[in-house]
Amino acid sequence: MGTDLQVIDITDENCGPAMKALTPLQRRFVLAIKEVGSGRWLRAAKIAGYQGDDHVLSVTGSNLGHNPKITAALVEIGGYTMQSIANEATAAVLSVLEAPMQNKGALKLKAALAVLDRIGLGIKTEHTVNINKTETSTEKMILEVRAQLAKNPNLIHELPLPIQKLLADQTKKEAAIDAEFTEVTTDPDANLLGG
Image 1 (cartoon, rainbow, N blue to C red):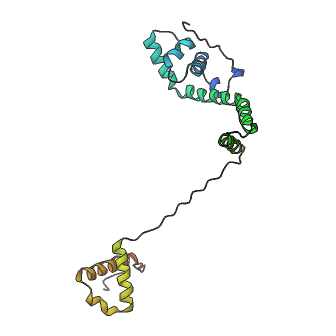
Image 2 (image 1 turned 180 degrees about the vertical axis):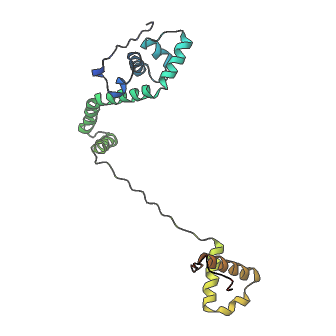
């Protein structure tokens, strides 16, 4: 194959669903990516056994690396890899937890919190969102003036004309919002002119 690394063909019984959906050559490409790392499409294509010059293999590798089926297979084998090292990770966490506290308090706490989080006893976080409607200074002023006018309606004549106009406009807007209506049905055959 012209490379220092080789990958072997794997059979269907040794594949998860995503790997089973691939051709044997594509499976080798996925295993090559696992070995050489993501983004090294040319090298992975060579290791997998694809044919062509470097330009052809670079394009082939890039196309394969962006293929959704290949991506799904990479995620699948990545998950298997993580599961296979779970025992080592657990042993490492346990060794930290069981070690004497000598200058390892923070590390021990992190390890303990990680274990608790993984078994469903992690720290709960809550977020509270308060939405407060704040009134603009104009709205505030209108409310204050109306409160004073409710106590003494004659004050309206002492207000400057722009404020009187603002209050009148605001009242018109509110009246339009709170409009009442009466539903009227008409008989299309009735003579509306009364004749």
